[in-house]
Image (cartoon, rainbow, N blue to C red):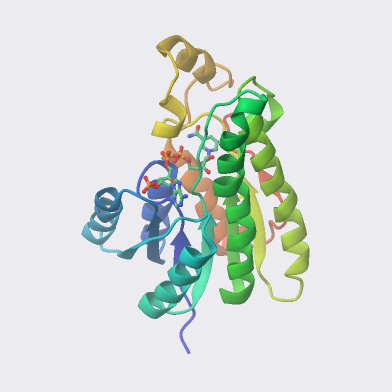
Length: 244
Ligand code: NAP
């Protein structure tokens, strides 16, 4: 029997997810490239992976929708066999103060960032092979309590809570479950709605004095998915250049 080497990355059509998918493909995984809306961008991720000699297939699913996720896993297993690593990267950052008129933003943020994590873990529990890896994306902004980040911070704090329990619940299966919490990273999600001054200020907050690049986060996730990362379990790794 061959060792399963398929990895599923949610939200891999661009940004951090695309960089994670490319890196895991370079490390020898066959990639399931999930996306929600942008089929062309997901196809570009697949093209870049295959052009570099890797294997990948794009599959659409909104991660907050249980039926679409069910279909995603069934299509993924059919396309690429048993799954060895799941990276739940898809996420949104709707800026909203904690005010009654923003309940809809809160619900949407929790659905895409947190409810999805519970659902992905449910599938991971059923699908991950012995020795598998589960990684979810949190955020280092948890430590900063910036105004307007309430729904996002609430959802990502929930992700960090789930990851520790999930690692314990997987006892005996040699599967690790961890979160990676980036600081500011140069992607659409980060740049949207920010002035050049705000971007410069956030970039200067860590002692390395630059924004993170998607590849910085992909390197961290790849470590956790590798043999070398096998003793890290139930942790939140803050990959942020020292942003605190
Ligand atoms: P991004 O550039 O906006 O990309 C988001 C990705 O998620 C896209 O591929 C998008 O696919 C997908 N997505 C969005 N909603 C989805 C849904 N409902 N179902 C499935 N896929 C969905 O974001 P990013 O900056 O790379 O962020 C990736 C992760 O890192 C997120 O969890 C984010 O919270 C976290 N993070 C980012 C930063 C940062 O500064 N960038 C910092 C800390 C944490 P479509 O385009 O096809 O919809």
